[in-house]
Image (spheres, rainbow over the protein chains, first blue to last red):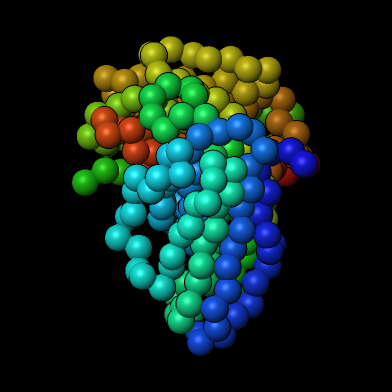
Length: 116
Length: 109
């Protein structure tokens, strides 16, 4: 395995379902991120973890719940989502959290989420 | 507020040169990134600028002027595989990465 992997690649769920997105990085990085990408809009940063500790929560609704059990794995637990939550959810990692080219982020392929 | 501006879409011809501009207004500046994103795929890192001037990497070059809050990505000898979205992102004074909405580049034969 190389880089950043995400599963599942596609997910369709109803508003009452509970599901989880998984991200794994094989780069030895210390920081991991969840982003939401909607059509023709900038990437929206949702959560940031540095050395397994959450450092950022950009006013994300509580129906999104992140979990970072170790520096290599990141989960996004989803429950009672709304149709407007349909988007591409991207995971990324970087060597460091701040400053210089070492905070270059490497992205996974994303999970295309559709909420019915 | 913080803002990154890029053209929404551009069209160019195979073999030609295209310049994609990015202007930014952010609280501080700690570097500017360009990423490429093919449809349905992950963004991939292209370049990083923190000092004024031109950084060249093969067919791609990126320029930065901090005093003007301006960058461009220059793509030479365009190939069909260069059809993608190009994302500009700036690290602000709090080391938050602020993203533009991306420029969709269409290459025609």
